[in-house]
Image (cartoon, rainbow, N blue to C red; front, top):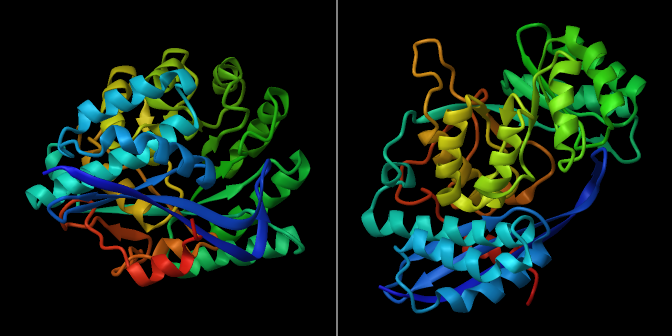
Length: 377
C-alpha cells in the first residue's frame, strides 16, 4: 500500500451574522481539509487549524515528501516532514500543516486495521464525553448584552451543563456580561471565560480578582501566547485557574509552558499542535507535570471527530474514582461545516457527545456537501 495522492479542500462560507473575539473579526468561516488517497482505495481525512489559505500552500508543498510512501509509517513521516520544514518554522503554520496530514494518516491506519484510532492508540477509556458550548462572541451590529443573554439561554435550552463565553472587550463590560450569564444559568452550570489574549497582565489580574466569585472554571488565554512570564504571574496574582495552549505547538512548545508553570490547564488542539502523533507525546508531558489537559477543538466535523478520538484516550488523572473526564469543546457559533459535511453528523444530546466507533476517525465525508463549500483551486 502506497500513498497515491494528497488533496486539499478549502471550505469557505460567508457569515450572515459576523462576530468578534477580543482580537479578531469573523465575517467568513474558512477551514482546510486534507485528503490522502492510497493506491488500494483507502482514504484518510485530516484538518489544519488556522489560516486555511496558508495551510493549503504548505500542505501542497509537503505532499511530494509523502507520495509513494507507506501511509502506515506515521511516525517516520512526521519526523521527515518536521525535519525538512523546520527551518521554515518550528511553530505556527508549518505545524498546522503537519497536523492535518498526520490526522489523515491515522484515519487511513484505522481503516486499514478496521479499528477506531483510539484502539490503535492503546484503547478507549470512554465511549462518550460531556461537552461544553463554545460561544459568547460579540455579535456585530447587535446589543452585546441582549444577544449574549439570548445565546446563553439557547445553550441552556439545548441541555448544555457547561459553556464558555468570550471576554476581552473591556473590564467593566466583561464583568457585566459575566454577571448576567451567571444569573441566567444559575449556580449548577459550569462557566468558563476566554479573552483570546485580549488583555495585558494588569487588566487580566483585575478581571480575575473581580470575576472569581462568579465561580469560573478557567480563564482562557488572558494574555498573548508569547508572554509565558505573564501567564506564570497570573496563576498566583488572581484566583481563577489559568488555561491556554491552542497556539503552543509541538511537544517543545507545550513543554516550555509546563516547565515554566504557566497554566493550570493545557489546551492543545490536535489540528494545530502536531496531530495525533504529537498529542500522544504531550499527554506524557501532562502526566509528568501534573497538568490537566482539556483539548481545544475548532473547525469542521473532521476536527471534531479527531478531538473525540483524543478524548477517548485521555487517561483519568489521577486514576481514581473521583476523576472526571475532560470536557469536550463543542463550537456553537455559526459553522455550516460542523454538521453539514459528514454523512452522519456528530451532535450532542443534552450536552453529551458519543465518540464514533467506526474505523479511523469513525466518519464519512459527504462529497456533495464538500463540493458545495469548497473554493475552486
